[in-house]
Length: 172
Ligand code: IMP
Ligand code: MG
Image (cartoon, rainbow, N blue to C red; front, top):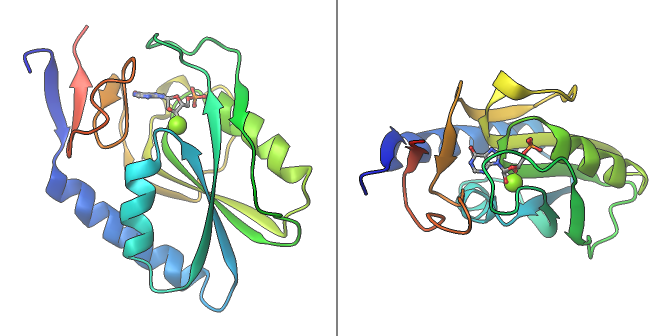
């Protein structure tokens, strides 16, 4: 794979996921939590995260699309899969793969807020604040990565690389 340079190993990711799961389990102890995974990117992270959590959770998914086949956001975000569970009066934890500009999450937060949840918290495996242009409070982040387009562990470029167990920077 000559075009990929390693950024986070399988072991780095596992350690971070265990830590996040412990912190979330402590913070939400005794509360009925609904996890909302953002497809497709978050599917591997979410699957690992919930298996390390020490509290019961319920899980639903939404799907947001913004990138198409580019490495730059297209600026138009759409919800291509709606929630299937009623989130009114629930403690909601959004699980994302990576937050870049924050536009997708700002869009999702508006959508969720209209459904009157008790609270909405944000958990992302990777926070990439360099290009952030929406004010988002990230409650839980596994890693802060300064730059580059990352692939692997659920993250794709044009639907490739999601299956890789570690995370790489795509060389341009
Ligand atoms: P944002 O709206 O710019 O924050 O982008 C959010 C979404 O774009 C993420 O949930 C990812 O699905 C995708 N994305 C952003 N940066 C990357 C990256 O470095 N690699 C792969 N996908 C990315
Ligand atoms: Mg995503």
